Image 1 (cartoon, rainbow, N blue to C red):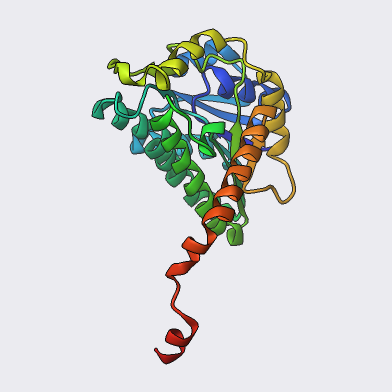
Image 2: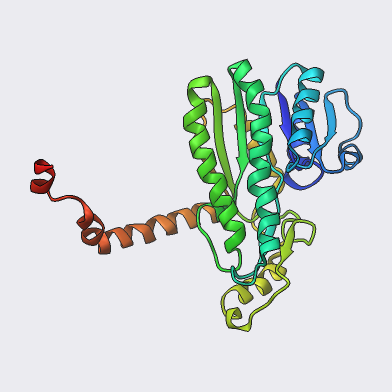
Length: 282
């Protein structure tokens, strides 16, 4: 029996994963800004503790961890799931929109992780699963600012993976592609209020396509939730776990593109090293 702490657990992936973990006999500290929505969704259960948590609030994060430890004795799995998207060209995004996105997607993840780590270090064990995105591996027009937050999550996760492995704590970043959730609904996706006509053929196209793609995405959210619950028990888990055929295709395409860049520009890239003779004389 494990104890999970899940952020953004009132709907979407967070609620689905919480429900599967509960049905499997695990304990779940399920958090959301409005904890009532969690019990409305998942019901009252002896192995469920619904806790209010705005991930940008460090005091609330520490209180959530404390409540979970007092109720269940520890925290074995942290699922950093809370987050939202922003659609619009980079120039179209206001400073307020960018800052709000980073507060939740990056600083919120950091806040909750910092709150949990003292307990996991004390236990000398734990799993941290950070939900990233296909956009955490490659950016796309229209989602530039959102992708930048997920790039940050990827970098933090890689560093945490290296820092915490000797302490018995495994860190993995999970990269879902497009799944049939409410991510493209207004509840999860903000759209930049400013629209610049010069971007109609790039970010503007993505704005229109997002509306038509909503609720017809290729990924099955129930299968994703099952994968995450099973992955939490994986032996020697990888630092990153791509999920979805579209994510795999995007990664392969980026690898191929980067390989072409290296092939064409290698002689320029390596030209900045010291000459062997100069290095010997230093």
